[in-house]
Image (tube, rainbow, N blue to C red; front, side, top):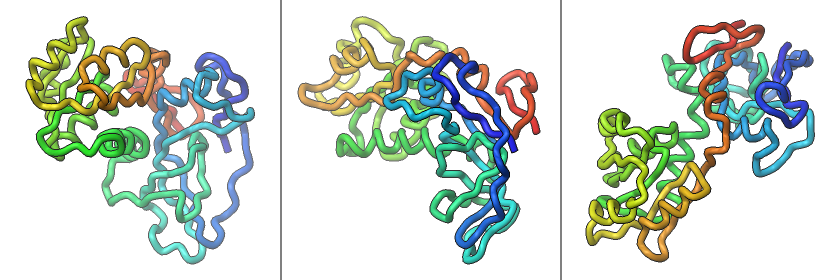
Amino acid sequence: MLALELHQFATVPEGVRGVEVPEPHQPGKGEILARLAYASINPAELLLVEGRYASRPELPVRLGIEGSAVVEAVGEDVESVRPGDLVMSLLRANWTERLLLQQDQFVKLPEGFDARMAAMLKVNPATAQLMLSEFVNLQPGEWVLQNAANSAVGVLVIQLAKQRGLRTINLVRRSSLETELKALGADVVLTDSENLPEQVREIVGSRALRLALDAVAGPAVEQLAAGLDTGERSSTMGCSAVNLATFLQINWFSGTSRFRDSGSPKLWEP
């Protein structure tokens, strides 16, 4: 079967190649065999390919942080799923045709769940949830400041914050995004500007601003921190050094074999 491996740190896609690897064996006790449905391509993976991630694995290494798959066979003592069920893989090597998974390496998804959405379920929703809960004990009515508010994590932060009764100030680079983000629950949408601290303070008033979320890094961190109350938290979860144009062009891969230009997103067809 075909799998994608990182064989050298290089630009995308030069550092990645398709290789033939042995088919996994039939599932044993506590295992399932599943065929890949979709796997998203995260900015973190592009950083890894280019050798700019926080750590460098020994090469060659399989890739693929996220993936959804359809169960083909189950082993002894597996009762939580049956052939045909959709699962989210918890492995970090999902860019391959088939996956052999232990019972603690997958999550069964509800019947009818969108397989594409399942391939984006592990990283960004969890990141948004943790950023809102792990650094500051926010109470309903408090404000959260974030940049890159139209990113995958950003729109999830908006929606999760709304559910918790939190209010969000959202920084973007284009004013045309305001309507879209407010429809998701954003309270305030601002375009990046030098007078951000003054704008934020005017919005928040006398209330404390205790958490800012950064997905850009660099000078953007200073900009966010300037809007915070003294001694409060600015948490960085990403950086803009990723080649985002490439990321958007190769948004998805599904199955194996060849690229098909279907507009946006692009898919791999079996």
